[in-house]
Image 1 (cartoon, rainbow, N blue to C red):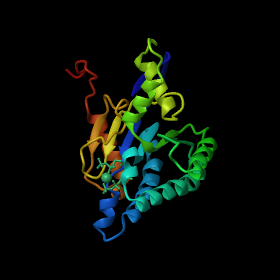
Image 2: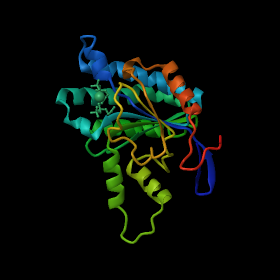
Image 3: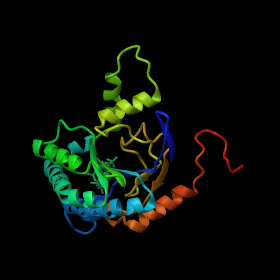
Length: 241
Ligand code: IPE
Ligand code: IPE
Ligand code: MG
């Protein structure tokens, strides 16, 4: 959680969430998958409001992977409409709560109105100091790494810090992405699905059986409690022995 970048010490707590299970939540209730996504957006609001009370400084939520374009067009269109609505609906709440909102991932395949909504929300919330909320849309960790690598000049001196900075630029994430401290996946699957592969090198993983629309404040608090009980060693010997 302590990171040093360019000689400055930052105390950061970066939690990233793979918000999985919207579709199963809906179909098990006889609802359409789109209704599951709508209910999932309510969970986003709950979790984003609780996160600062748990000292989370960056919260990155995986909303749409680059592979999710392969889903049926009506599901994709519904998701894109939901993102657009979310950005407009949440802007004021983010400003009121000091939350800086960003969208990470590719922009060039998003519609022009959605791109404009992203810019609007990012600009309006850019002074937020309480927490950085990042929504990953059209995000693929492998593509981000690949696009960052392809921007490097041959023979350029490259350090992890410089690469991380370039990666943040690729992701439209501002100055630098802090490493992920805690990675949560809901929905019962135990895989990363191309999310934050570079940034999660030493992340603690917590898997929840709950479907994302059912994930609430207490579940987030429980995951954070579990994180604080883990012994993070980063390859060194435990300070506890
Ligand atoms: C996660 O829920 C949201 C997105 C991937 C957009 P899913 O839609 O993957 O829900 P399940 O996994 O099919 O239940
Ligand atoms: C990962 O979930 C992407 C998001 C939660 C946005 P998926 O449902 O797309 O992942 P897989 O297909 O089960 O690996
Ligand atoms: Mg899924």
